[in-house]
Length: 129
Image 1 (cartoon, helix red, strand yellow):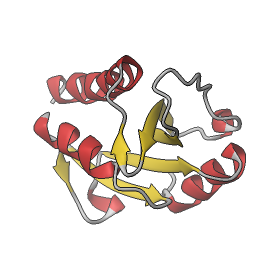
Image 2: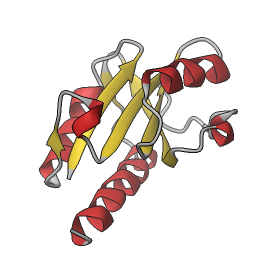
Image 3: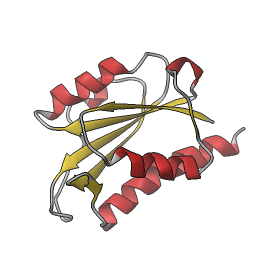
């Protein structure tokens, strides 16, 4: 399966996620026209609704999107709630919330569970091919 990665915001955490996705057999492509999925990273930096809308604007219509919301915190126990306004985006296949601090994903059960959701989606998709 081919995946197009897009990032809205600046962090160094996307490399860790894309490496895990690629380890499951996903192939990164440079154009959304060539992809089966879009993995869209959205750094929540101002207001979640605005950040999500900006990410949506970067994604072409008609492709399934896995939306990765990135929350900056040093607290691995931080409660995060799905971003408001995600329901207006018909192409969303899955939304996950990841915690990061100083350019790195936090090593915590929450992030492991959320990453597993992403890997499960790609595992199901590749088994259909």
